[in-house]
Length: 279
Image (cartoon, rainbow, N blue to C red; front, side):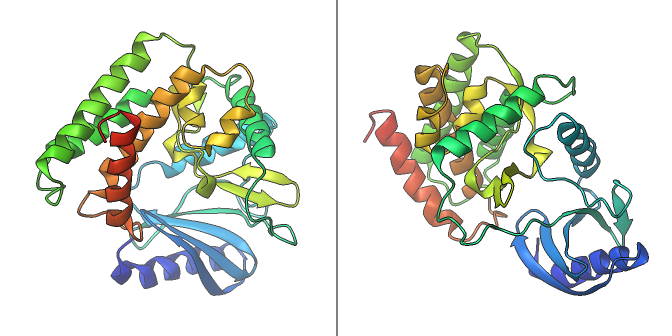
């Protein structure tokens, strides 16, 4: 979110919380990317705020409720207010449970715990019939970004060709494997997993899609895949390179707001070349 928008977005979240009987005298910014994540105090609620054009909020609220009911390890909405999307001053706001991290907080989630939580999420997701895009739709979004030189002006031609070839070839190769597909989180990377006193919980469900479970595992640390029985390791390797090409493409978006995003994009281009033997 643009820095100039943050004060208004915070004010919208605090105003909505107050109108619902939650005292929100202060707000701590926990994350600022395509949407703002706040901890409102002293009511201790997690607020997610996005411009009103952001269309995924309703989907995320509905899916989170169904996954919690299915016993999945996902963060829940705040039980003190009606589970819905609130709108104010050009922003949509959703209110979630704030989870205190365990004490002492672990440096990283153990791979076995990560793999177990992701497997339980996938088990619950298999019970739901939810219309979502296929993983290839997300690949196509990255391809469209590559094709738009106005959006990616700093990307060298050779790097643009490398990313385009990787996205196209691996998307086709993965599809040709005809692996079983199901509802996926879409981006279950470490930044979307909370360590809580009751175990790991997944957040940010707006990226859900359909595809092989290896596509989800490709977002997790490599050690997680080693604790996931029944996984096609060759398919997982292809998915890892595909995901790396996708997130590398997003780092070259002129509007990308990830700190050190351009530096990461450069590093990841080198990793893609090495993985494909083009070093």
